[in-house]
Image (cartoon, rainbow, N blue to C red; front, side):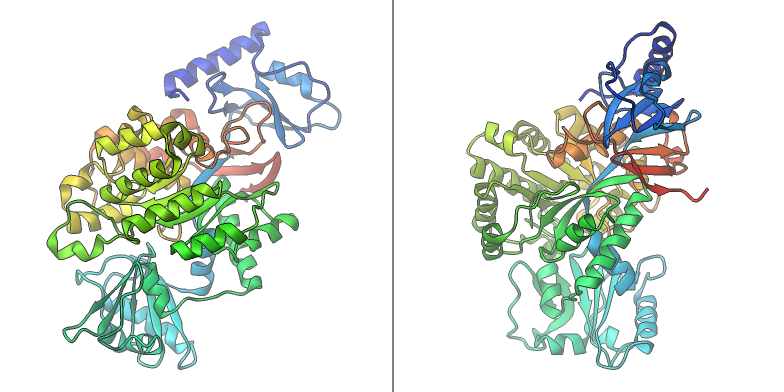
Length: 560
């Protein structure tokens, strides 16, 4: 799709007025019956080259019937048509969050102790929150916390430093990114890990004290789950899923890709769908930690495809923090692969041969290269890669040959622009400024022809708002105000494309959603601000959904 800039949109607006005056036909065709819903008098951003901007839109049977001028769409108004006068407000396609963990989001907020910054910034504030939770929890029962980032001490606390505050409960605290954890002595003892001969888990690592005994610092999800993994029952799964999806709909999101879903938990989405309680479409990517898990999954999983929920592919990870070619010696323990390379390639091949989409977490430059190579080996040709559309999550660093190769293979890349604000400074400390300055290279991706999607990645990131992703992509400022390479910034209209049609493309949905055109599903957002005139990140911060519609039905309306 071609770039839609502000000039193009303003020209389209003028064209819409001319069409209204002289009867020029837009998308509208001769109606066979009146529409269920008509929006009039607005500024409808279609994210479509044929007609980027329109005044009005007709919806029937949950699909867009026509878009065009008020005059053109007036023919769709009948006695039973609901008409919404927009009074100049903007409408966009429903936003697509192409990478989040909805049930995990609900589980963190509703079931865990939340230890996010700025409330938790050092060992003392972490222990304060854990001790407060201990007072409400019977002795011996688990306390699970999530959300910490970095600590003022410059490292993670060891188990004995948590024991000072919580000696009588097993404690597991998880980093907000989900790749690191810290546990106290009671937790490590319950997991039978207080011994020098405890083997590191597959794909993970225990940091150790001088005697070789694990010190409570856990690297990668496999190490975290080897200590404790909270299991929620069916009722709790429904509660967490429904709560998380309501938060998404309130941000203008009409479709979310759950990229790390327990296969059993995915049933919650189906139950909500059948009960008529889903405010968003959901694309499910169950996660596989090993080749054996992957083989079992592709053999047994039900290839579900409902009206709102779809099993789209299988998620795996090549790295956790970042598998890099060059890493400072003191941080090499962070740059470890989740699988040996041949085993990783076999997992990708297993997913490919099962006819499913592979979805790979790859942060570091070396991890990305492993992933692209695995896609090519599994597919056998660039043409087959483009047809199958296996995708990469994160792809943080600018490496020109890798970006061009991803474009040649037609690999969609889902990035999290808010990474710049919440993770860049930590990476500066561990990797140095040079690779960080050009991280999340939005402009280079577009220039080289890579199809980009945006995702919030909650709860691994603190914000589930698409506007925070767009703001970060435009401003490229870290938490300390440091501005990274401004040449990699994108415009608001480009970012909006990435959060709509880009997300649709990443899940092979572009013929159904992602833009407002006749025949596509009527997923859209009515906004409080003027999307056509957003020129800075500060302006993005003021945008709010007035209403969110799924298949022409309101699923969220602002209180005002």
